[in-house]
Structures are given as structure tokens and as C-alpha cells.
Length: 256
Image 1 (spheres, helix red, strand yellow):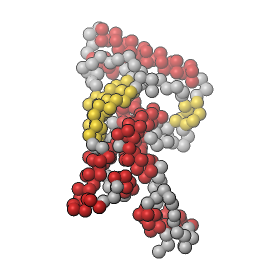
Image 2: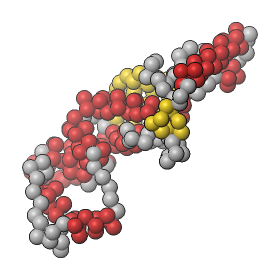
Image 3: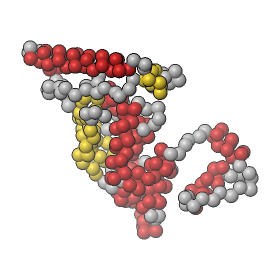
Image 4: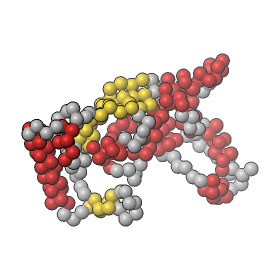
């Protein structure tokens, strides 16, 4: 993005906080529980989400208003946004590198086909944005209140907010906004936050990629299709999976 940023303001908790929260229910058995990585993998795999809520992060984000309107649909965070009723709006606005046609498959997405005269249209978009900002400043200089003058500004203007969220809900946000059908602009932000998660809670980051992002969810009918395609005497083996996971896989797809 041309003018946007994400800045970490504060964090609470680490991978160890997740493990500690999960092990508290084990009572006297905590000394014999699995390793931190193994336990976090188990929690992620079995979707035991409450231990991940023990970690929180607060971010300072600058983003275009049209992306902010998508972002705010995730109602599990605390948000404090700059107010154009109190502050003079800046001059930063966003323009994409390319203009794509509407998808014929997904009604809310762009296709991969660019508009033939995109250079001309991008210039028109730029001039419209400049004109709106110029008129906004004229209204302010003429004494018009900020809360009224702002209404002529376009959705590609940048806004800023503080956004605080727990790790469980953050991962849910990332899984949705990193998806291939998410709008490209919000995916840029999601990818940047994922890198922050990797630095912050590396064990959780690995488990998230392994059991959520790069995994699939299939229906019971789909399970039957896979099970019936596997020979009855098949034994599952993998050096990348624990014996517990292999047993779970065997129980799911094996023939009883």
C-alpha cells in the first residue's frame, strides 16, 4: 500500500501464556503434559480456542476507509478510530496499481482481467480524489464545520485507528482475510499481520498454518468418499505427524 502502515503498540502474552492457560485445567498432572509445541498443535487441531484468548495485541493501523469498512465487520476487537469531526483530514488517498473487471463467478470480487483503458481511468480517479480534497480544504477555510465538510471525501482516503484483539479472534480474522477470494488490499494488511504473529508467537504461527490455513474442511459425505477410496488394510505412516495424529487419521478414514 502506498501510504498505509501497521505498527505494534503493545502485546500481552506469549506461546507460554497459551500453554499455561491450557495446563491449568490439568491440576497435578501438569508435570507430565506434552511439550509446548505439541500442546499448542493439539489445541489448534482440536479447536480448543480459549487458551489463545489469553494473548492480546494492540496495533496502530493506517488504512483506506473502504478497507476499514470491511475490517470493522470483525466485531471481536476494540477499536478507537481518528475522528474527522475533531481532526482535519490529511491529503493521503489510495489508488490501485491496476483496475480489474468484475468477476463473472463471484459477485463481490474482481476478476484477473484488467480494464483496457486503465491508465486513463486511473488518472480520472486520481483527479477526482484531488478535487474532493481541494474542495474539502476550501470548505474548512470558509468556516464550514469539520463534521460537515468531511462528507464530500471519497472512500479511498486514509483513516487511522488503534485495534486491540485477542489471538484467537485475530487468527480467525487472518484466515478469512488472507483467503484467495478476499480483496487484495486487505490481504496485504493480513499478510503483514501474519508476519507479526510469527515474531510474537512462533509456535502458534506454525500450528495456525498447519492446521488452519493449509488444511481443508470436508463434509461427512466427503469423509465417506475418501474412506471408501482407501484400501481396508491400509495403515497410515508419516514422519511429519505425531502418533496421536496418525491414530486420529486412522480412526477417521480407516475401516471399522
